[in-house]
Length: 317
Image: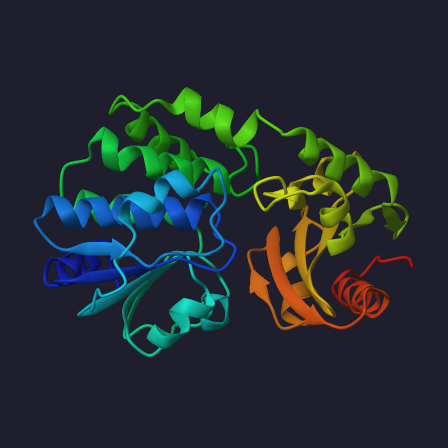
């Protein structure tokens, strides 16, 4: 589906509910908020389904548009959700009702009644930007959450997924007069003391494999409890390992519950993160992917290392 057709379908919708993914990041939140605002500017009733995983950083872009408990949607739209398993618990009741799914992941499962996917897009925000341009005029209110979407999913325009078009979109959003400096400080240049303590512990207990090209970093629940850290403190911890010189495959193991670990894989050109995670039931992008595995941490690490070795011809254990 083309962006223009997606916009046409959105124009025909009334009473729209927009879904974001579990453990929401800036991309899914920014896309949802911007799309909600654009639909409202067309005179439509649109809300975001409340997401229990929003953090201190992302909440301001969600809470103003949350659906009231008695809202009955006629249409449901998902943004930046690659698979139904990534729906929060309160969104699963809408799994079979998604009229339009908007996404940019190569592993997108095509679950919507209508789907628009652009795997080459650095962020889903780029795709939503193009759709909204066919809906209404771009103003600062819509542009700010879209800037958050594009900037966070590219690591402040530093990740390898960043393209020339990413900068074109960012420039167009900045030209609306948004306060991009405050957004950049909020998401890229501010860390709590607890966040710094989390990073210190992760680096203290880091494990290296494959001639130090693969790094494993762990965030057990016991560490979060000991530091009294919140989800806001733990946002984007997966980017830490990839910053280490010589490491081209960093895996962050985040404990979600007893015997349940969320893996975030960040890689360079040598390792395809999507293929590694696909072997463990997940997916994502070539340089950034994830999965959830139910097992003890030693077994989860063993499975992950085996998946990396199976996808890297020159792997050395």
